[in-house]
Length: 426
Ligand SMILES: Nc1nc2c(c(=O)[nH]1)N[C@H]1C(S)=C(S)[C@@H](COP(=O)(O)O)O[C@H]1N2
Ligand SMILES: [Mo]
Image (cartoon, rainbow, N blue to C red; front, side, top):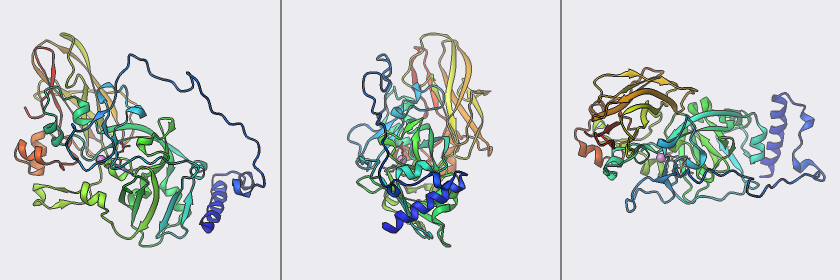
């Protein structure tokens, strides 16, 4: 470790020079003879950290009813997308998928080790990471199994909500250091083509990632929506792999090893590989980008319309490919479509808010939305997706717990009695 620490200091000095500051201006604590006096700020009291109004009760809910074993021992909570305003999911409401127990890492003791096929193995403390050139970007995260018809099967309730069916996605402003900046310091050896990233949770959650993506837009993040990452989201540091399925974004990140092949670690092999009829029931191993998708979040399942008259239809659209270009809304079950207004701000690989004014005449109708992304990919209907993937019946879908990356259009049926129901299958 001694050599790592020296390496880190050298690196920080060079890093600072790179950022255009005077090298002498920064010295690591260990190089100082005695620490200067500092003022400890530890605010307490009723106004130190704001609480929401007691009238606001929106909260996360368990993704699966009790008793359904899904190989996850930690929290598995869905975000209340029906209550989110704009495009940012409040951090306390961000969805959660944790395979084992939450680590409780002391930020003073935190280290991120980067090793393997690099020229200079280095470890970084949280303070080291915060001294480096940072970026803040707004990106969605989505669990690979979000919206899977298995959910619709488990949630046969007439009152399934958008949270029940699709709450495995959220969107935050993430702040941290591009992984490419860290690799500039460690150097990369020839043949280093994949990364194996490991979390500090009890199960040592491990996932591999191709280096091309790592150098493109992957970040090592410590900030979420203006504050420190939440423990559920990986405090103090996680990977953030924009646009790709959630499992690549390793939480409680403690080491990255550069290797020369995909490792197919346990979490990837057992939990996240899928078999599909269109692949001759063979497993698909690596599944990267999340496809284009949209949902009407208001009005949506489980809600009741107060009466006939004017409503703003509102929803979220996103794509792992980049920007959402267009969202169409149908208020007649898909016979006719209207372009929704993209409310903005619009970010790449981020939830994007759309709206459409609508007047309800009191009759039974089916509402749905359909998004198109910057690559001109159009969100498929259930029929189109069934054909593409070779799922012939509702039953094949329902037993396919591993029908990952499910992005068929979500239909909501508004009944004459003003109640609203999941109409994915009818
Ligand atoms: N260390 C660790 N990282 C992890 C996981 C985990 O269980 N442990 N779950 C993964 C999965 S499957 C998903 S979908 C995302 C979810 O991120 P979130 O819990 O912050 O929403 O984290 C990924 N990273
Ligand atoms: Mo996930």
